[in-house]
Length: 239
Image (cartoon, rainbow, N blue to C red):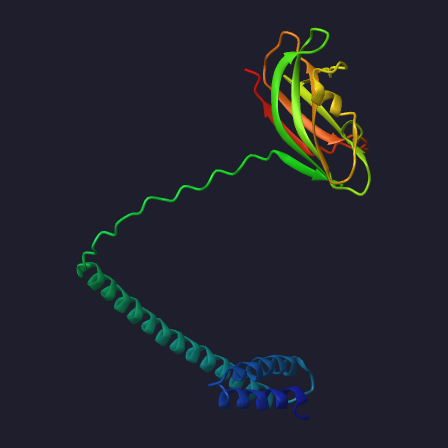
């Protein structure tokens, strides 16, 4: 009977694994030699001597590799233990060493942040509207009204009118206050006047208050708009 090809391969790989056991690649031929040896032993009508020798060499290669790995890990463990011990001694010495007393640093009072200036105006399509003031008065038909005053500046390329450029509304307790259709003074008449480019005119809007004197929220948006576009808002105190 002839020797098995797997048996011969197993013996060669087992010898290689013993020779190269000191490097990581040594485990690969040992494992392959073990597999080939098992295959050769399972074959019929083949001599088993080389397969048995290959099996022994492969097992020895694997065993030597495991021993080398254990020794290497043991050495690293000893080094780690020594390092931990040294670090522990250093920490103890650090705790026992008194720290130098630092002179107290004089604390400086924090600089207060400047209060932002309230927004009183806005620009839109070449026009500027600046809130000036508000007052409660009686209009020409005896109604108690809230009058809101603005400076209306036209910096666009064509004539503009405040009433046709902007829509200002007032809300009291979340409910819109009805605008007054009567002129309260000369400034309220100016809201419907057309002004040329480069001109500034003081205008006013009036809102009927009735008996309620709660605070009012002023909102200004474009006169023609497809969706809500609030350009300016301000809370107005009436008392």
